[in-house]
Length: 399
Ligand code: HPA
Ligand code: ZN
Image 1 (cartoon, helix red, strand yellow):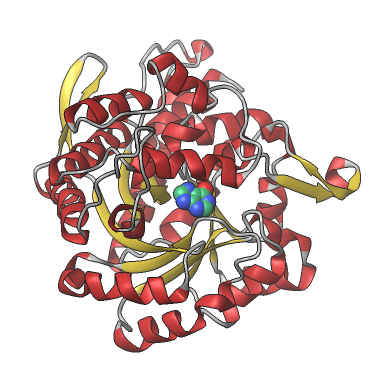
Image 2 (cartoon, rainbow, N blue to C red):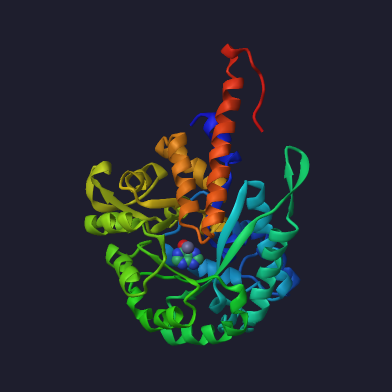
C-alpha cells in the first residue's frame, strides 16, 4: 500500500461502532490492576500473559478468546479501574483521529460469580454501579474536557463523543438477562442501547425474544443490537432482524452466505459493524467463488476477507476494532491492514467511513456535520497532495 493512503487513513476523522471496553485491557494494564487489587494471576510474568494473548498468531475460535477475555475482567474491581481502562482506550483512539465511539460493556461479566483463583479464593465481584460509573466518568470527561494526546511531539486536547451500549451475555440465560436489566434500571440515563454478545454457536437470537420485546416496550428510545453472523449462520442474522428487531448488526459477515438476506440487508440500509483483525484472529470462516472454493475455509490473511463483496453488494459495512488489545490493533491498524491486504482505494476507505457515520446512533444533524467533516478532509488531503507533487515544484506537507 502506498504511504499516501496510510497517511490518509491515519489523519481521517473516524467513528468506531463496535468496541468492547473490556477488550481494551492491554496485558500491561491487566498486570497493573491485578497488583493494585491483590489478585493472583495464573501467569508467572508479562511474557507468559502476552503469550496467552497470542500476539501475532490466532485463537482456535471465538470461545478460546472469550475464556481469556472473561478472565481478564477479574482484575476490574473498583470504579477507578473502570475509569482508567476507559480513559486509556479514549486516549488511544483520540490520537488516531476517532471523533465518536459507541462502546459496549458486559455488566454480567462483572456482577456474576467470577469463579476462583488457583488457591480457591473467589474473585471479587463488582456492582453494576461501580462498573457503569467508572466507564461513564471517563466518557463524560472525553466529551466535555477532552483528552491530552501527543501529536507530532506536541500535546493537543481532543474531544471524543460517545454512546454506551449495555450488552447481554448470550451464553447465559434470558432469565439472567432480565436480572441484570433490573440492576440497570437506576442507570438508564447513561445507557443508549442494548446489545447481545459472547458465544454464538447454539445460542440463537430467538432465545432472547422476550427480553428484547421488553426492551422495545419499556425503552422505545434506546437502540437494539446483536452480534450475529460472526461465527453463526446467516439464519441467526435473519432471526436477529425478525425476532429481536435490531437496529444494527454486529459483525454480520455470514449475511453474504445468503443472497436473499444480502439484498434485504442492503436495501434496508442496515448497518454491519465489521471487525477485520477480530475476524482474522478468531479464525473466521469464509467461502465464495472469489476465493476459488464453495466450502467454508478458515481465513488466514486479510486478503480473504469479504469486505469488497460487502461494498459491491451495497451493504452498509464499516470497520471497527472489537477487542483491540486481544486482536492486535485499534482503528487505524484495522483500516490500514485491511486496505493493504485488499488493495483498497481512497474511495473505498471513504465509503467505509461514511457507512459508519450513516449507521451510527448520532442525530441527523450530527451525521450531517460528520459527513461534511469527512468530505472536507478528503478535499484538503488531496489538495495538499498536489502541493507535494515534485513536478508542481511544491514541497508543502499536509497536516
Ligand atoms: N464476539 C462475541 N462476543 C464478544 C466479543 C466478540 O468478538 N468480544 C467480546 N465479547
Ligand atoms: Zn464484538
